[in-house]
Length: 546
Ligand SMILES: *[C@@H]1O[C@H](CO)[C@@H](O)[C@H](O)[C@H]1NC(C)=O
Ligand SMILES: *[C@@H]1O[C@H](CO)[C@@H](O)[C@H](O)[C@H]1NC(C)=O
Ligand SMILES: *[C@@H]1O[C@H](CO)[C@@H](O)[C@H](O)[C@H]1NC(C)=O
Ligand SMILES: *[C@@H]1O[C@H](CO)[C@@H](O)[C@H](O)[C@H]1NC(C)=O
Ligand SMILES: *[C@@H]1O[C@H](CO)[C@@H](O)[C@H](O)[C@H]1NC(C)=O
Ligand SMILES: *[C@@H]1O[C@H](CO)[C@@H](O)[C@H](O)[C@H]1NC(C)=O
Image (cartoon, rainbow, N blue to C red; front, side):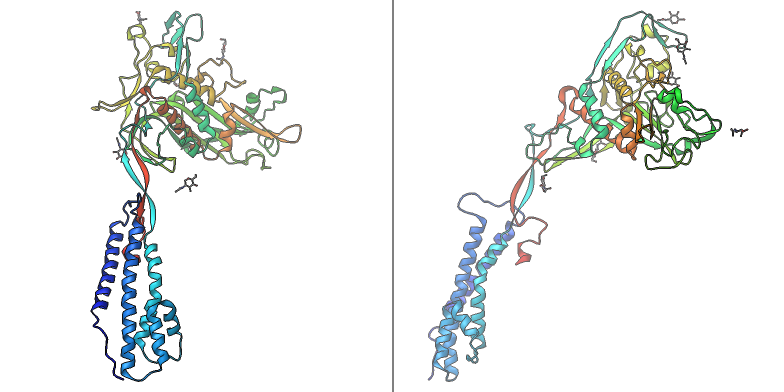
């Protein structure tokens, strides 16, 4: 039986070419939309197009396979005699996957390697569609557009003037030291810091950094924004270890505790008790072999000041708001040791006005901000000058330059305190009520006029050197107890990393200054909107995954 091919291969070749061409078109389409926003509106969608292309390609492929397998039947039967059942099998295979499976797993079907291959491809072709669909993967990518409408905003302060100031008019005189005295009263100036700034300061003492960061009034409607860098008036902090300045002696009477807690009834004095001192006059002593081990002992003394001359290492800061010197004894309720068998540390932390450069981004509705201090922007010498110099021509330079709140001298009217640099026309300012109010607020928050101190006035520098403490020990009830002044002492005692607290306070105060800036200054950024893209970047891309 001599059988011939019934028709030439032209149609199969044409269909194969069409099938391949459609795959190529599909790859080009996918490559085009790789990492690009896709059109997903209306009837025409990317996966619809891919689906049409892959289905069309598959149809052509199946046509090629059906035709080829069918024709192969003729070739098989023309080469040698075969069972007629084989003819039926091959014809079934050409009709689709089921026939192909039966043919592939029929052990009795001999020869026809190419037919088997064709059957295998017919089966595999089933998977073409779903695979093609999988190539179309979507992801979300942020597309940023510059916001010109002011929908997004990052606040910054060029001038801050919140706070209140009230001064009494009263006869004054200037003494031989150039200090101002008010005749008949001890106080002329009543400044008050803005309440928002006051609460931000206290919040900064205890809050976590990310919670503080959330207090800045940033607007970002989509929850994802980028802002250009802004420079702003700010509060900075610095902490230094005072180990090189801490001196130890055994010349004290160990009786400091009785002055602090003003319970002279139990007062005990002993010769040659161990004491630690700092050059600014802060000290800490306890009764050797009697203090500690469950009995009352001073664990911390503090000295806070608005006068940089009264600090140990912060003398170079000419925009000082507050400096806190702390002597701390390592230990607490877990220690059975008696004084002086304890480690003692000293630290000084300062808060001061500065200019910072902020870089901010909002992601997922959370602000991420980094900043650097612009060290070149310094206090301008001609700023913070006396408004009517004639009336105060005999006043001391110390008073002229001082930013510290003073109950009488703060009544002198001044120009803004300004930070800037020579040759630059940009400067950052803070008004006198703000400077005086913040200074007065700091001294009432971070220091106390302790009962043992005599003649405290409204000027914190008369409360020095020791104006805060923490005493711990076992009192009558057998329970560990603590006494401290002012309230913040307990937090400063509990926190091992003091620079963290002052950093947080500085950040929180800076937020309040930026939120409360004159003219509510702010800068717009670019707003990120999530866009659906084909195969989000970071993946291999369509072509490679094919
Ligand atoms: C205290 O020290 C001085 C000088 O070292 C010594 O003369 C004196 O006896 C000491 N006093 C006591 C009670 O140990
Ligand atoms: C600051 O402290 C120094 C040294 O104690 C003192 O001479 C100066 O008068 C103080 N400044 C003010 C403004 O009180
Ligand atoms: C602020 O910081 C940004 C980014 O770090 C920098 O490009 C820019 O020059 C800085 N601006 C100033 C005034 O230093
Ligand atoms: C965005 O924030 C939400 C809620 O805080 C969180 O569940 C989600 O995982 C965050 N997404 C990213 C990308 O960080
Ligand atoms: C400053 O001191 C001089 C000399 O003591 C005195 O004559 C003058 O009146 C004083 N000026 C003022 C404004 O008090
Ligand atoms: C406290 O003030 C009184 C009355 O003004 C004065 O006599 C005394 O010397 C002052 N004490 C101190 C330590 O300055």
